[in-house]
Image (tube, rainbow, N blue to C red; front, side, top):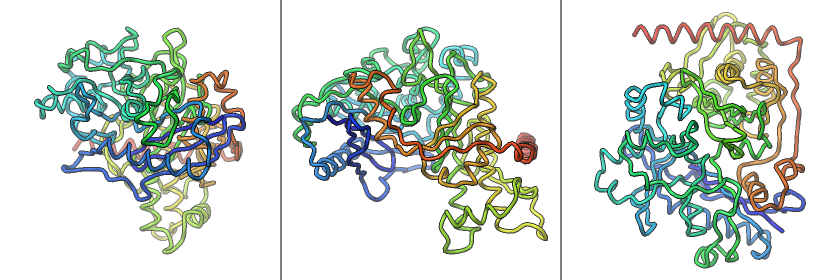
Length: 500
């Protein structure tokens, strides 16, 4: 018995086939092999053709089925993870009307700001737990104003994962978690956000049917089965956005549990058990995969855009030429905690929500030409990224989240011992590293949705933990001092920007 998981990213589509009995991945593949195209005809725009996601899914499916030689009839369920906040518009024949506006497109920002200002913080935060911001709803508002003929053709709006589920099953649906990431779920009413729909001028029937995150959400059609080389009738039993799914992949389900990733951008995603929000809207709040009205489970997320991209910039421009990341980490470790007074603010990849959408840029502080060298700069970069995580986590703590343990995949910046030790040292949390990824997590989510696993603990009983990093008590004061200096310098930069 096998489980099939898909991860629909903006760079590639990954498929993994997992043995339901052992929990081990038996085959995995991703396409395209070079980064998928993002269409950007204007600054701040980002679009993709949903048909390309389907094409890459087909290629990845063909590859894993050929490699594993598994009989398609032995696949018991399918799960889907997907890039969040995208907008796919379909007509009544389920044809895509225009390219999808994806997560990193910023054209919805002014529509979100206007809605927040006119509707008021109390209404938006009290019901949506966020400002309308740059999410799916405000991307649709842009289409309504700028492409009215296209808007009039829209029958339903979908997230990227909803589109893939529709192609697999023929059923047009979404989830409560999905509506919350669209910014169209009213937590106070436990229903779609009618007040925001009315304000933005959307018809109520533009939203698809709502299905539970873990449930039989449809079955693979004969047409899809023939195209993909699968068996007709396989149930799709799970779907979630990439960050909730990453948390699921790391068995993060309950209050006090935290998941983190650190790729090009970095995310800390923690679970709270109360419907709460930050009054300054510096973090995002979404319905987690196991959220219910009776037992709330919110994923509170801080996202730092200038994460791995700063580290890669340092590698290209500061590190000794020709060395890899592992060697660069060794050079960085030659400097002491706090990099002898050097601080780097890692905000050079656009405005950050945790800074209330201010664009401060990245900056280097405290360099002494007689004392500091490449090791100080390289260490200060990694510390600056971790300190920006902590800055967001402090907001999450103010909302009631506890920071005892952080789960992360053994990938990207979490491959760096210095990065891991700094995160443990400044947060006081234990870091646990696991060997997993989004497509494997989606497969196991499908196992929960199909009833093959009793619960998440059974599904992830075989999760491969690689390493545990405990905070070192003797280093706590040094990390606290370095973080305090970093925050002092950030405050000064933000004050200077406000004056300008």
